[in-house]
Amino acid sequence: MRNVMRNVAIFGVITTMVLFLAQLSACNDSDSGGGGGGGGGIAAAAACNDGKDNDGDGLIDYPEDPGCFSLKDKSEAFSTAAGVAVVLELARRFKDHPLPTTEIRFLGDGSEETYMHGMTCFMEAHQHELDKNHTYFLVPESCGNGAPRVVIGEGVSWIERHSPELCNLVLAAARELGYHDVEPIILRTGGTDMSPPTVRGFKATGIIAMNENDYVPNYHWHGDLPENVQLETLKKVTAIFEAAIKKIDAEF
Image (cartoon, rainbow, N blue to C red; front, side):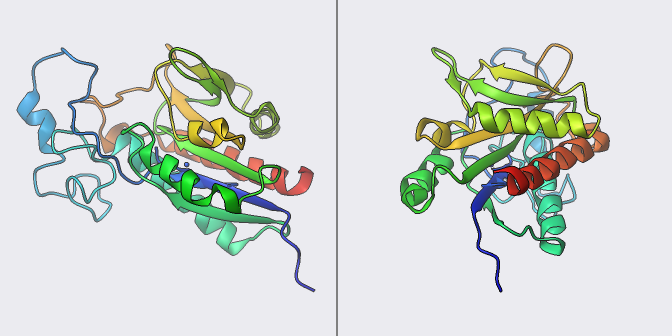
């Protein structure tokens, strides 16, 4: 007899039901780096406008390469490609070992940098098809370098709190794997693809990798290069998401 699917896990980034989200592209054409900072302008822009496959993913320059935010972007790799790697590895693992009662969907929505436009469009088009009680959004957000943090809320003027139930489950999955350094964090610098599901009443959370100052290393900056992606961080993030999805299947 075929198992009845109870849950839907949507995973995506790259930066997001149980693994649903992979932010595969973005459309922000503004320069990165938080303004100012001068120097290195021509060299910094080259990676996404040089006709080369700098990060070895078979895709070249903006807009074809999802690691590029614009023709001016300084790298094809870091915040976006790291999340893609996590998504592809999880897809491989669950393809070989599907779960009995959880359907896993992988979503590449794009345009997170333009006010989560891709995820917002997805929610507006498909939220009526999803059960809020049994759909879970997990987002790998800029997870290529640093210590993983579970995002429990985000916002600037006010904080949108993500599902405590789902956040606690991901934190518990990390601790069961022996990753006792994984802590919760509230992002106060803007929104991610976790926000559109949360504000519509769905359960969402994600993992972001931070440095000792709780900032994403090399974010949109000169060091955003493939050689600065930490393989151990990718392995850890992937393991936590895999364990969390299995816990959703077993406990929810």
